Image 1 (tube, one colour):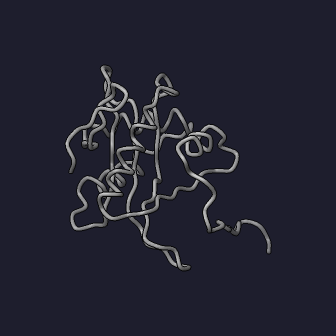
Image 2 (tube, rainbow, N blue to C red):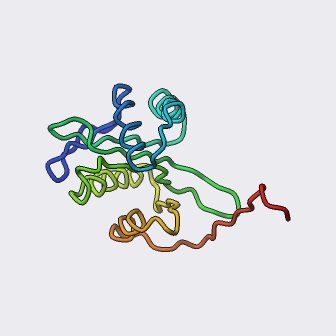
Length: 157
């Protein structure tokens, strides 16, 4: 794991088990839903998963504790997709939004992916989640070469 890095006066570091309650809290503030079991599983996979693909679990720490987090990993998918980095979770304490916390987390994650030989990073965002879409677009993300499709199994075909 890389040593701590300071970005925009925030220390970006690897997440630790003791960060779990703060990640749960920040996620709950954004989603309105508390998911402790989900986050316990994610922390177990990321912090204890030895011999797994490249995984990035980062925390942004400021004077008042954990300000934000980011999770990503190297994945290879079907349908002809190349191996790439995936960002699957990013969250910032609402009191620290628009202060480059998430941008700092993303920059460190991208450096880690690049050092692992990865040339492309992807993510998936709800089309109506304008703040998150704006964040990724402001950081250079554009529409990719794949289209996500889904089928609602609760509806009659």
